[in-house]
Image (cartoon, rainbow, N blue to C red; front, top):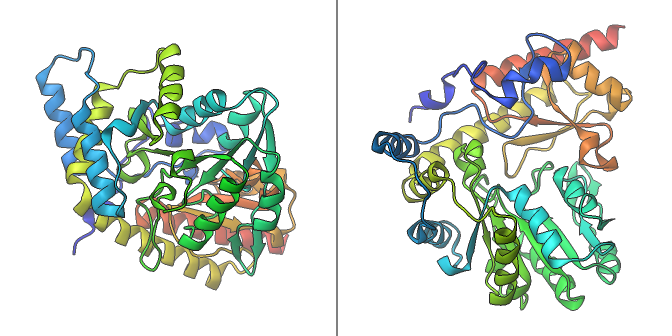
Length: 393
């Protein structure tokens, strides 16, 4: 099988790319290899590009309809790919998962309510809560023997005083794909304490052999009507710039409340290109995704093997899902500001500052390996050389 489509280096500088065009300024050095913000350096599937080109050729870009048949594409995908039976009428369009989290927080809680998150975790989880005048209640993941797991004892204690829980499944940044048993235990605790769950499952399609993504809403947990699942084709098919996502809400009352908030803010319309890409991706993107997963798994293995052999001061567990690696850099004995400066200005590799994922991320950095192998290899070589120079200083 040829992976030329993923090995090809596509120039993204001067393309209006946050990842590439903002890197020099953000990291304070020229010629930085940007492996930070979570989009991939691969072209989207041919079926998506062709559908968008056809839509452009049509030439009329008026207001799109709700496009119910696009929601059927989502429902069919979830059924065939993940054995989850959903209904199009459960779905509400949103302009992004982060926006949907904020909308849900504001819809289903009141100021000063407590909302559980599980750090280290995607930074907007913190800001969506804090910026809405709600209280962040941390249920930190436990880090033992190089792997993360949930702390259910602490979760049970925190759930007794919480209104909502925001789950990341699979988890960004640590790369865990939660097991059925873990998800069932979390659902049980939330059910017992009447805690509503917002489940960010945007990375659900990006799971590697040996692991299985299980939509939380697919469990026979007795809490399906208390789960709001947030997803999008953006990570899977590299369409983040089209800002189209879906909230899946089986409970009619909750769905009506959420849709009312979306409508009141006048963000209840679909993007004509976003919805076109979504439908094409979910209808025809499966074979491309299968090839992508093989390539990304190869990148994950290359990264972990290279770091183990050449940069022993940095530890990394092979990701079970996502295209994000969570680097434990504590043995470098640098403060967090020094660590950020080291990667950006000494190694000239742009990574995400681990501290932005919570205080549990101090000493860590996040690396995006959704790129051609040659770029990843160059970045790892730069890091290796910089660490050697650090040891000689």
